[in-house]
Image (tube, rainbow, N blue to C red; front, top):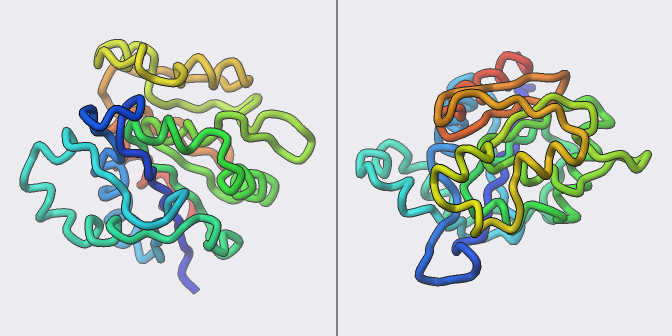
Length: 222
């Protein structure tokens, strides 16, 4: 039986609930991994906290070619499963896609936290890219420790957030919060690929890291 991966994407489509400031999923952070996983013969599904449509950050669609290249994924993102309806025990790896929307509806989500606690205890792969590690915020294991305590990870850095002039608009600073939960945060160069693997955790720093992070997941699964 082929191995399987569950990609989780955000349902949140605005910055600070301002309809004039759209955000959401950064398309390539779900689409590139999806294609890599499929190309490796893995079974791939996409879910979101509420299910239904996943909003796409308009800036991630700036290259019109992406719409054609990622047609299949875009169709799936229009009607995703709710993670509360997913039988997560059936997956070998989980992959949290980023985009600024993830900063709003990933942290503290009880369904996400249950999935990650199970995956960590069972030694299954927990992976994320860019703002996807926002899913780790407040997540704890059965013994009450933070999920990322003592784990080397990466994600969208404070420097990268400042460079986009969005630090003050975020509910928290991702790097700072992860470090406060005991993570060994590994920051690479701004907007260049940086992937960190520590046991069953695989994380990528930014959009440029999505492909390499997905390939690292494939390597561990095959």
